[in-house]
Amino acid sequence: MSTTNQPAPDGDNKTLSDRVRSLRIGAESGGGSGASRLRFLPWVFAVVLLLTSVAFGYRAYRVDGSFRDLDSGKETVRDGARKSQPPGGYVPSDGSDEADAAAPGEVVLQAKGYVIPISLIQVSPKVGGQLRKIAEGFKEGAYFKKDAILAWIEDVDYKAEMEQAKGLLDASKERYEEVKKTMPLEVKQAEADLDETRQTATQLKLDLERNKRLMMTNSLAQREFEQAQYGYTSATARIKRLEASLAVLREGRLGRREAAAKFEVAQAQAAYNKAKWRHDNCEIRAPVDGIILSKKAEEGNIVNPSAFSSGISASLCEMADLTKLEADLSIQERDVAQIKQGMPCLVMPEAYQADKTFLKKHPKGYEGFVSRLMPTADRAKGAIPVRVQIANISKDEAGVYLRPEMSALVSFMKGK
Image 1 (cartoon, rainbow, N blue to C red):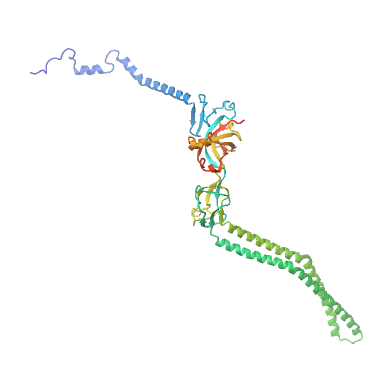
Image 2: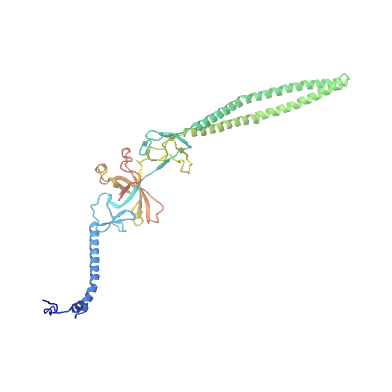
């Protein structure tokens, strides 16, 4: 039995096209105002979401009371800051007078910095050469006292130079002693020659006078008279020459030759001292009491203090006295007015701020003080570099809790 052409029941007698038309926007009366309300619904949700975010952000700000400056790594506390902060806690730095009104011993500012040695020493050889031997235990972290030998450089050439200079020095000393002893004897010899010539001249003068008398009686040949005459003249000239030589010895040559010999000794002594210095510095010694931070060369390497190429080491190692450290900080320009020279500080290493062993020894961290404010600002950061010298670091703790380049929280305290 077919039911295809039977009429639909009441209520279902609408055709498919009628149903589609009824679903169109605005098809029914009043549909235009409903569509208008639907267009504003997303904006309402956006405004509600924005207000909710602002409300939660303001609540979190009021509860936490702090914000962190990501550029400088410094934490600052505003109006709702909690007063029960640990050492390194925080006081406003917005230009208000609250920091100035802080009681002595209270924290006025906290900043993050990095630990650096006060003096980082590049241990370089004073002479170049090949490392023949390195001291036992020479490695990073090893402690050496001042003047302890760290390494030995091959010294064959330097030893030969020193021995050559020593020979020249000995020779110059012998020449000086010879001059001191022989110059007075030379003066005496010149005096004796002069006396002898004077005696000879006296005799020749007597012979000349005798020959003159004989010539008057024609008892002497002309030749013998001339010999006597010119012999006496020659003796007189020789006397003058010997007198001049003696004057030169007494007044000039004696002192000058002795002084010249003395200067030759000094010159040879300087050359020997230089050669000995170079030989002695084949032993590389520790310049201070300190810890080896990094090794730059190994046994068999060639070291040279004036080296620039990568094949030759210019230094042996880096070392520093880790009982003398300071914290390097960058303080924003808006806060630098609160920092004063000599201001007391507390330095807490971030790596040990929750370590029970460290806190038992240093509950508030290491004590320190502002050693200097750098004279030049950092334009890129808008900050002033500040150095805080760390005190009370014992030799037993050197390199244990505070190491170069570690981060630390520095709390600046209100002084008395």
